[in-house]
Amino acid sequence: PRVLLLHGPNLNLLGERDPATYGSTTLRDIEERTTALGRRLGAEVHCAQSNSEGALVDLVHGARHEDSGIVFNPGAYAHYSYALRDALEAVTGLGVPCVEVHISNVHAREPFRHTSVTAPVCQGMVSGHGVFGYELALRSVLHRVEEWRA
Ligand code: DQA
Image (cartoon, rainbow, N blue to C red):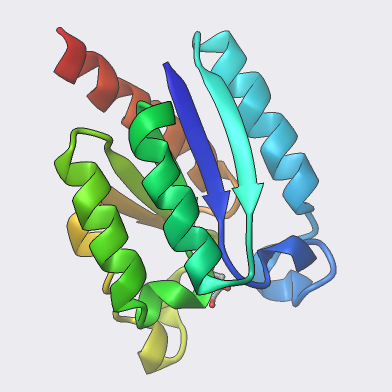
């Protein structure tokens, strides 16, 4: 199976941005580690990042033809982007599961981060596990893909 590892706004700055909250791992490290784990698990991981909402909508749409599943850290768009929510709802509805990842524990932070408008149309959400959350999410999405295939 092929999995899209997708990152939203400001996550290109990982490693430089607020390391007390997000740690020192860069986006490239996350992409390399997740791709390597995918390879070990028999999956091909493709990576993309955008700071723009419309580009992320297009990337999610593209996954319906290209991918078996999505691991997605939508950044702050998780908290208010109905456009991304609708895109995810459409694509997950076609049988492409998505697991949402937040590196930080969004529930321990400012109240505006406690809401995710995208998580309800995802298979589930992983938050507060640091970059280990990507491993949890990838394993979970592949588990779901295998269940659906069986
Ligand atoms: C984040 C949490 C969001 O609230 C924030 O806007 C981010 C990063 C995380 O990975 O913890 O950009 O998605």
